[in-house]
Length: 440
Image (cartoon, rainbow, N blue to C red; front, side):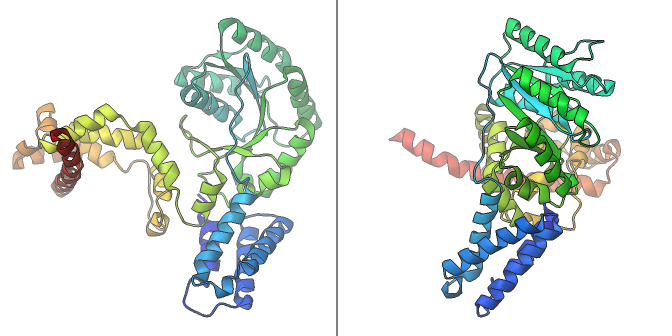
């Protein structure tokens, strides 16, 4: 995410991190390079200039030249201004209503249908609300079947009415049914076009007027760059939406839309989509995004994701097994499954400060655990529960069954044993204070 702009801004700030003498001249040069990085990321010139003018004024006002650590102070200022540019703080979605109606708008191909399902999954899991999806795209049959497929995947009902070409009528009927059946939230997916046109705007305006939704969200493909900002302006003028959703932020995006769309329309970015999986949806936190752009990682989001998958009872069970030297391959596989649920490996690594630089030229895929899973999968149940039983002949059979070399099997077994020893040591240290308290 934002690899290009991140590396360019970091390079621009690097000159102030050294031990060289800091002057108003090289501050101006640094700011100029930051502006160039923003322009390369498809940020419009007026916004890039205004942003860097504010950074320069702040730097001079805070006496960066006299600062003991001018480089760090400059990074702090850029971080603050990036956060401010993107909205300062996260803005929650409004799901109050009986039912709450959420209208989804955007161009065709922006990811509206997938986002609608992701949002339904998010509201059900995080807000503890019952949700109904509405297939309001009457022009593209594939959109209806796609929403139905996604609805089945997340176990959320999808309202459709075959033969009805009136999206307002379909949505109104869906809301009445949702109210009758006690659903808390109705999410209405709508039709898109390849470009902004009058027919499309009239239809979405009519939906907004007749449904009076609690939330109207504009979905935009972040890979479209500055065009996304212009499209957002056109939609906002007609339907006055409540928030923006940026999809495909994990793709080859330069980041200009993410940085400036909020500034351009004065509406918050509420969510970002980071993949195709139904749980690959994050609340947009401007300060955390600024940290990632500046190569500072996002430890808070990483911890939050870990906590979502954390099972306290399972953790106590694992700790007990480690202390008694009973931790086995089945336990290991269970923990791998929890890590995989947290999101793509590339995204997780990007949240760890400094790791993006270490893995810059390394291809990181979501299949990183496949070799390990294939090796463990080739073991018998007895072998998975008793790691110490693995002798030479067993290893040969496991290697043949998993399609891996005996060297790969031995390497994994050594890594497993090293991990088990390290985890046992940590667990034992964490256990001692509890035992001491009990004796008192």
